[in-house]
Length: 283
Image 1 (cartoon, rainbow, N blue to C red):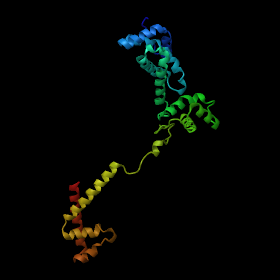
Image 2 (image 1 turned 60 degrees about the vertical axis):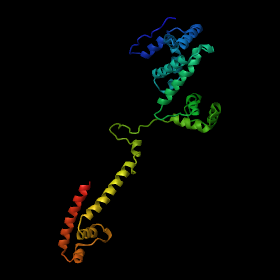
Image 3 (image 1 turned 45 degrees about the vertical axis):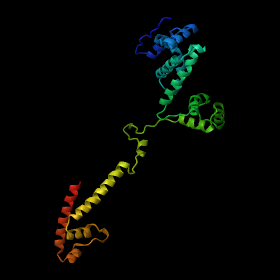
């Protein structure tokens, strides 16, 4: 069989050019396909793999065309399908008597399915086997775009052998749409998006640790600052600032120490200044 090289496609209508090119590549006969398969398996003949891939590119195009209803680019669907085709060629065993097209279609669909599930929504709509079955069958089984009736839900669940609740949930997922967390303003107006409601005002771990460290530093620093004062100065500071419920006045302390209120004020000011210096040194 002659080796084929795909033509360089022009920027305009490149997808149409690609499809025309792959459809022009001749199909393999059963004998030729078996020969190429043996060469690949027994001798790792990459040219044989290349010929098998090229001759089945039209199959990928045909399969990808069935998935255009999901709103994804056809070129991307074809590209993913080609990946599946190459995987199938690598695993193809001509000794089993099955044609490559029949064997490869499973791999082609599998890659396209994975691509659709990854890209159809920002949030995955199908993760389990039952959900995937529903995702790829529910659209075609619905008779209209309206919400499924209870009878339709029961019929689909029975046909696909899944729970009725799964059918209802998948329908709601497929009818939903992605919403931007932080939408851009439109027409000069501010839009409030979900991000505005996601802020957590509670104290985080880092804030908690920082607060505890600051509290410990302040407690330790205050004790050391008080310890640096003489007994009279410490008594005045404690009576004036550290007993908020029973704080004493300057005159009350003046009577206690037998000095003027002005003298108590001077002692207090000097003690506070000294304590500020001690706290600043600790920080």
